[in-house]
Image (cartoon, rainbow, N blue to C red; front, top):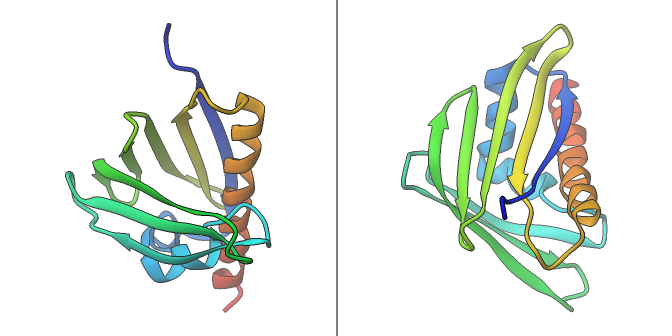
Length: 141
């Protein structure tokens, strides 16, 4: 059975180069990489080359749960596309397309089998919405 693909998208008021930087810089990732305000991303590391490792620690602020989101870069085409192979074999690909208002950022990922597709879509969209908020703050500087 083919893996279900899920897509989330947002538009940010930044050039593709700056949108890429906010998406890939570890000091920026820790500011937006969580689905809601009860969570945070205390650490992140990136090695932006094919075969390099991406790792982001995601934790509940109350300390009740946490996990490492980790993968290996399979594509690094700055500032156009980034593909990560996740530890469980799934793939996530993010593209950065110029638009009249800045950049459209789209992530398409392989769904996992433990949670409903709708729940996964909502969680990844919430994270991307936090990325959008961070991008807007960077743009306002």
